Length: 417
Image (tube, rainbow, N blue to C red; front, side, top):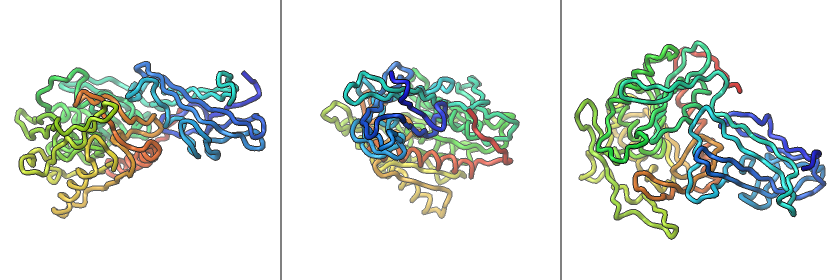
């Protein structure tokens, strides 16, 4: 390994997961072509990797903010392209980074273009989910089990319930870094394949628990949700007190997959997939979108979540290339329903060329992985670069929306490493 060639990660090699970095290489030969590689291993032991070829300038420097990739995992100027294009060494794997206490480690290396085994320089990017001072506490209260993240300082802070379809701490921890007290819990327990019904009552308990936290400065909470969890969030807004704001991402306007109960009675039947309308692609992966029935048809209308009865602000986030749910159509249906009643309690955004799996930014793009509802590999949709740009924009919009609608006494809080 050359001691002269330098690979720098700026402003520092240790950063928060949702922060961009600048990758720079110096002390190369003038106009030298090298390959820059990135690799990471997720929590399931799956290795993800990417690479791109770059030509140094006349001074022997490469700056990914400025310079275009010539070939490899992507082409063109894309500062965070090596992270977006991290690809699993096994097909159809979703990048799993859900334990907030463990950072996402990405190894960057510079290789001779002709001798790829020759490493010229290397550096490791430590991408933390939790900022310094943020606390993480596992919570088991009554009928719910989740994880509570609390920013440092006396508060008071606004409160957010982070609903995940299955257990994940990533989004909750990152929101806590922004100054929110966040309780995250899954809609479905880890082993829930035989569930016959879903109850809202444990989520109501979670809302009450959040409201009672000593650092929480408001009795009204926000909810962030995606996919199946998004229709659960709508139902909480419609039937349970204390929900001031809901972020709905890539969801449905109806209650899907499983009947919904509240206070020992069914409040919504389930909109069930029509398995005959699943589209199987050449790879064997399926497209679910067209197997989801139209909730506006007479036989399905009782599955619609009555969002019009919610005294809640909504942020609807949809993607035009969502292959799991027709989230754009469901978003439009809800907005039209609210508008007919003269309600203006919503904001919306729809991203062209983005797919179903919208997450906090700078993670690997996932085109396909196992879908627990159809028990098969599903295509999620989206064009990788456009999807990544949508995630950056969405993440900013979520924070702005929550700060606007789930406010309390102002407290200045800066996330620190």
